[in-house]
Length: 170
Image (cartoon, rainbow, N blue to C red; front, side, top):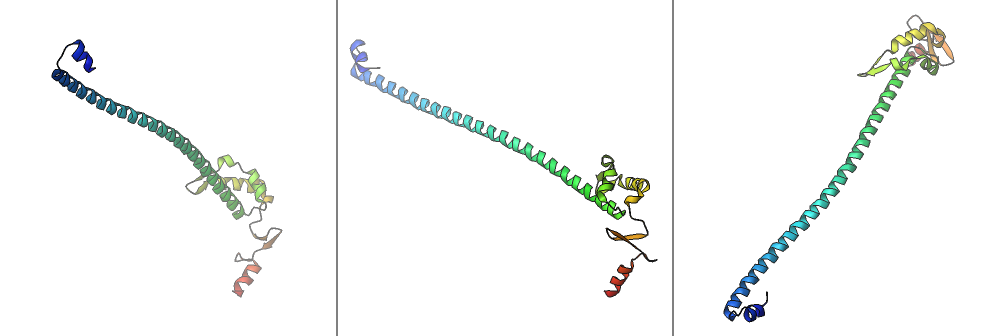
């Protein structure tokens, strides 16, 4: 709004024109402040929108990393379990007097052997079966396998001559 319009075309006095212009100025200033506040809210909303998009991206990235870690954990758990089972099998075969661990392991049906709560299930039956079917793969019960290439007879008390001599030296 212009003063010339109010005084010239409408024929208003200077005093009335000043009051109208003051009221108009107040309205304009109030509307400018409201507009600035709205612009700030829009800007803030756009920033939040961008932050939300960034956070969603981070969540997706972290979810993918979490899935990979879970997969790696499962794989490592399986490898550890397999390693424990393999060690238990080797130990059991050695304790049973196996001459050749690899040959004896090849005869085992590993799908039927499980490791549950630190206990091997299904192995002792298979070892007994292999001992029965392939006795040549195991040392004789009354012989000690002090060395891989030779068996040494045990005395009545179950110790070899060398073990008794070593015990006396100590």
